[in-house]
Image 1 (spheres, rainbow, N blue to C red):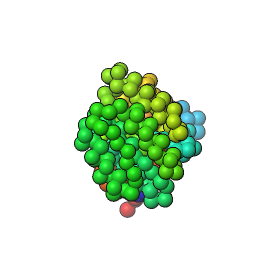
Image 2 (image 1 turned 135 degrees about the vertical axis):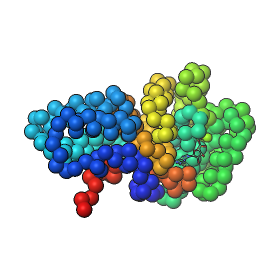
Image 3 (image 1 turned 135 degrees about the horizontal axis):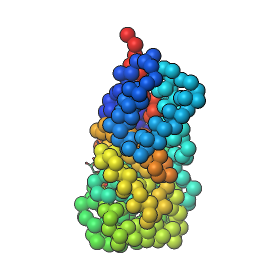
Image 4 (image 1 turned 180 degrees about the horizontal axis):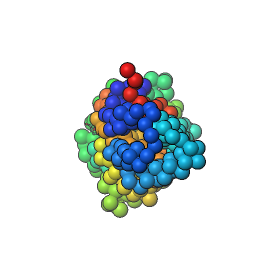
Length: 301
Ligand SMILES: Nc1nc2c(ncn2[C@@H]2O[C@H](COP(=O)(O)OP(=O)(O)O)[C@@H](O)[C@H]2O)c(=O)[nH]1
Ligand SMILES: [Mg+2]
């Protein structure tokens, strides 16, 4: 897996107000307005932004902070804390463990399955992929290519097959072959279609019936859709117990602030972030590094 680097440049740019900020400008209404505007522009969202500013103002008053530098340090702490209350570890406690990838169309589910397969295969784990997107034949072909390039095995069904049974078969196969991890791809579904959301609930239930245990249900969210991602997360969370979020396309997005909106409004940890289309373009989410990367003063010359 990669380390955070230039891929987050766009996100850092939307927080650029902070890099233009002078270390010792006074704490006045102008400063508060600018902080508020910067957060909203970076897609932190109105609700989360108001809450963040409220807490920041109360604390800065209590601590009698008088420079922009001290306010920014406090903001960093606060943002890190909001992300750190979550456990970002992925649970491998099943035997085999089943990780189910869910989300709407085009967010990067299949690509994320491939990236995780590549990561785990590189750590010498034996990985089985389940082609649970049986809606289109092209979907399992796409996954098959990835499986070959990652050295993972693939279990697929016929087009139109019941995704639950494909995923169930994959867990039985994994058990028989002593593979420790099953990564289950699923078809994209609109969070507004209740029959499709019920199918997800069934997928998780059936996957748990065999030898495997579903230890992760990962919602894949596309960072570029901004605040709409929040609505998707809320709807999916109503149908299945989401254990984590994979936030994709942060490389092309200036909307990294959605991370704070998710943290403030939903109790679902972000576990992985996608920073490109290749199988290596995945990084574990680290709140400390993320906040340090995007919020900083410009180097003084
Ligand atoms: N830039 C970028 N593109 C991505 C990322 N993840 C997925 N994609 C692209 O998004 C498109 C849809 O991905 P796919 O995995 O097929 O989405 P799915 O419909 O949810 O399975 C493809 O063109 C991927 O290459 C990412 O982290 N960054
Ligand atoms: Mg797909």
